[in-house]
Length: 395
Figure (tube, rainbow, N blue to C red):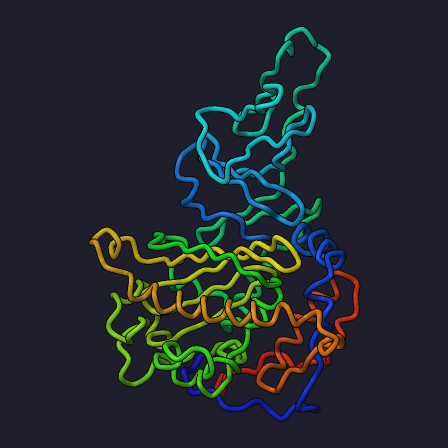
């Protein structure tokens, strides 16, 4: 991969192509279909592995229509289960996060499960020798750990993780090895901010994928990444990372110096910003000295919770480094973006947007996301075909 400035893609067949119709962002029935056919059917980034530091640590996460209980066993493995007692269906854990010593006990009738999900006790269970305890354990879901996060899939037969998650990252960056240079799984959490966004999850994805708006609403970001002012997002090109401005020292709110380059980051990745969308709910942002990971949790057709993690080298945090200037840059970007999404959400129900809007050429790659979604929910997207991401010049 060569580090060169982007140039415009070949002229598309049409300057404007259609977006999704407005009801895709407001219809509760369509959102329910997305919950079933998207969030409950693909790999979903649920929990940061470091949030489960000890055996018995757990978090509950909303994945589609299901509450999922993610915990660490006494042997150190991560397990995930539907958060439902097998007796009468009470929610097993109502807290968002916590820690148990050896088992989970339902607060309704005291059915008790070990950290592997096995039924180990219940009132009068000893007097019911015909009960098959193995058959009445918690319902497990598929689990993978990658990039320091726990990914879950509720499907009986999950899609290939290598193809639908790792492969997406490799395709965006131009190689499977590129993200490994950042050592994301070995970084530590420096800051986490949770945002309650009053907008449909797709508006947030579409916003993140394009930079047509950057010159309008992101003054701090375009000072650090001047090419973003031209409107082309880094994701428009395969393998391209937006270059820092000539006078910029680091990815900070004032462009001042950040921290030492992460071990493994190559010279051609230095002073570059890479953005990756892993549908349906993860954004990964790579800069030389830290990594920013967004996880979206769609709660309703018009509401999305976003957890954003800023990750740094362990020795950076252990040395007491002040990360506030690097956090502030993308926190401002997030708030500017989410304000824009919330400005759009009410108008999705307008008769003016009944047939949707349009994508200009530098947004055409968003149509691939629309097609991806439409295929999964079995509905016509209403958008035009878009070219695949354009190879970075010289690649």
